[in-house]
Amino acid sequence: MQISRGGVYVVVPAYNEAAAVFGVVDELRRAYPNVIVVDDGSRDATAAEARRAGAIVLRHVLNRGQGAALQTGIEYGLRCGGEVIVTFDADGQHRVEDIDRLLDALDQTNADLAIGSRFLDRQSKVPARRRAVLRVATQFMRITSGVPLTDAHNGLRALRRTAAEKIRITLDGMAHASEIVDQIRRHQLRVTEVPVVIRYSEYSMSKGQSGLAAFRIAFDYLFKRLFR
Image (cartoon, rainbow, N blue to C red; front, side):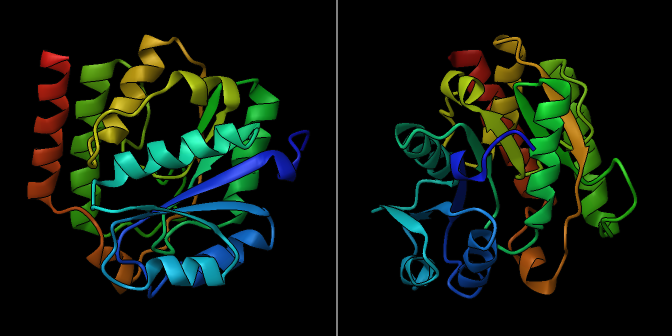
């Protein structure tokens, strides 16, 4: 792996994740020293738990949404000189070892960014209802962006510095995932997908998006595209 781990900054957006964020950060920092947790206006001890695990903690006074938290963390990672910015969820559903797979893919393909996909192999045991919602979201994303990805809303991504500088997230909520894909097309960035495992638990499922929420996300994204 040519990319040094010291040049990787892992951005973890977190909202009311006190129950999980310590374990997530602790596991991340065993492999990657630069972990940035953006506490997005949590009402619990998320910030304290992240700091106790050794993360750099940034805080939003108000809850703005995951997109805003990611943009805050990405900007900070770039200011710190990050060569690669990795986005990683706070609920424990991602595996730290899959970051290596994304970084290896960047090296091997010379892509600008690598995105995880739970659908490129059968290791992720995706619940049937969640699978159906994600399939619809993926088809929607392909139609609107023209980028043929297999997993529209996977939060595990690795962006080279040059890509992170070009992508600017303006949708504060969950529609940011579609916005990122739209910007991949707009900036003609080279993207590769990598099979990763999503670990579903009762806790992570409680944090997931419902079908109704998915329609709201689509509306937010289309509204932004029409009136930007």
